Image (cartoon, rainbow, N blue to C red; front, top):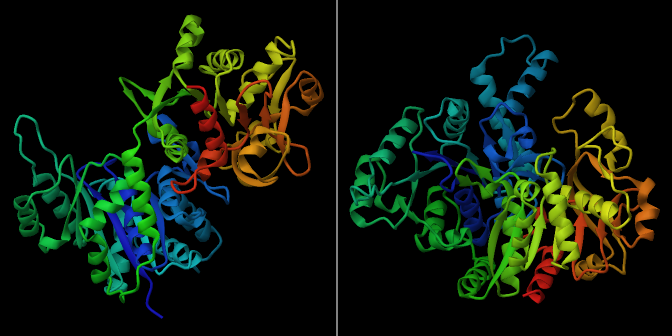
Amino acid sequence: MMNKKYIFVVGGVMSSVGKGIATASCAKLLKARGYSTTCVKIDPYINVDAGTMNPTEHGEVFVTDDGDETDQDIGNYERFLNTNILSTNYMTTGRVYKKVIEDERNLKYKGKCVEVVPHIPMEVVRRIKIASSSAEAEVTVIEIGGTVGEYQNVLFLEAARMMKIESPDDVIFVMVSYLPIPKMVGEMKTKPTQSAVRTLNSSGIQPNLLLCRSERSLDEKRKEKLSVFCNLKKNAIISAPDADSIYDVVLNFEKENLDERLIELLNLEERASNNELEEWRNFANKVKNVKEEITIGIVGKYFKTGDYVLSDSYLSVVEAIKHASWFYNKKPIIKWLYPDEYEDSPEKLEELKSCNGIIVPGGFGTRGIEGKIEAISYLRKNDIPFLGLCYGMQLATIEFARNVAGISDATTEEMDPNAKNLIIHTMKDQINKIKNENYGGTMRLGAYPCLLNKNSKSFESYKEENISERHRHRYEFNNNYRDLLEEKGLLIAGTSPDNNLVEIIENPKNKFFVGSQFHPELKSRPLNPHPLFLGFIKAAIENE
């Protein structure tokens, strides 16, 4: 039995250049070569989990099957490896410190003085090894968020260094660094990456591989310079140019022989490759050849940040749209729609007609909500395919209650706790949590079973009665209004097995008008698009 192997992926120069995709790609390549792999994400935030982070600043909160609120990269790992990644594979600075302090309070250190070093890095190492064992992984790829020059990463790099000292043949380091091409210079510059490598060296770590991100592929001269000044063999410099799709990245790394380098550096025995990468290649080639377009609108509130659009706030939604669209040989054009504008200028609702289908995703709070309800009303009246996710489902229920069932003041407790007709109200187990301001990690989180109505569009999409989906919410459909809304034509298409929680609502009079309390986007995979998104995209195509 071989020793467990570990690959640390760190960032140089700047963040947000693809460490998560690089991490997932390393694991994917090794999995295709016959090794069992998993990925771990380390976030340098004091937050205990990603659930309390502002999505406009940090991006999407990805929820695991076992109910952890994690960084969006966990979603990338799941999509690339086609497997569920659980809470053991995610840690933050806050989570690590919290455990060490709890252990100190419980005398787990048996009277020792507890210090930042070595005890914090030791806890990091312990968590990495638990994740590896839980996943039964032969190779674990660990992504350290941010860049090597950031103060908050020092302790994670120290943990990695300690693991290397403990088992030098089983730990390697991969740096993902950006090589800019300044327009006024017109030449790819290596100095920022050289500096990043020296910064990593100052932590006692020498990278084994450089994944060089840039607009274009590296030329031989740049590879030679990096080899000389970063103390690496030339074949350890891997070109990682911009790709049309994140799903092309794996194939580019294969072309650059990254899998061979990883196997060599980790002293892995050669194994027969499986057909996993061939399936991925066929998928990527299909995507490249899709020409016909389909326009899908997203009515959201978390993607406008100054003069820029941050699509990462709805990353899994966007990827799920792509997966389903490509399945039907369509190229999705995403149109970002701002609900605030519909409140001030109702005439702008006409732009919804330019889309083949509209998604109203999840969210929290009151900003833009009336605009979302106006948009949903427009979609229902004009029979434009609609998919509501979590809050989107709740708002669709409110819209139906107001404009079809005649409850003009229908609303949600989240918007107005003192309103008379709370069509959406607080879940019973959440009341005291909200009262006591116990917000972190306390929502209804993770995978729960759902029973589908066989006469629904949802059942038609899933083609099975019993399903399991991931949740993230505090509010629910108020069953006191259930009979009335059903009498007025609302279809309860899915419920919890005990029939207490409404999971899916539909309007049967529309071609496709579906709202789910859960987040189906979290379980969509490139080679296995989510059934609800397939049903939605099919309806959108028919709406062309």
